[in-house]
Image (cartoon, rainbow, N blue to C red; front, side, top):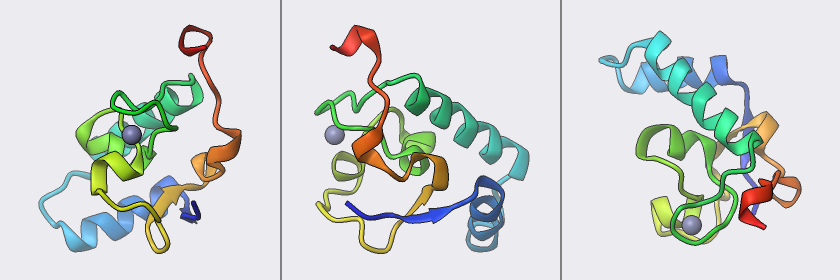
Amino acid sequence: MTFVPIQIHDYVKKHLKRNPGTRAAELTEQLLSALDDYKAGHRCSNCGAPIWVIGASQVGRMCFTCITGEADPSSDYEIAEACDKLKAPLSRKAR
Ligand SMILES: [Zn+2]
């Protein structure tokens, strides 16, 4: 799994260019909230894999594969802090 790392504010800028109707503050909030979930060790509600912060910010706590149906995120963005899925935190509850 290799994502293209991106900072939240850079991603928000890109997203806004493609989706002019989006409000930056709202998107930033959604991303921060999903990143918090990731850091707290929440996993995909479907399969238990680490969540994809960018996707999860829009559709809920799920991993890249469950959101997109693709196995390999070769050219998809992920928030830099959450890129290394092998080191993803795991909440004590999930163990
Ligand atoms: Zn999943």
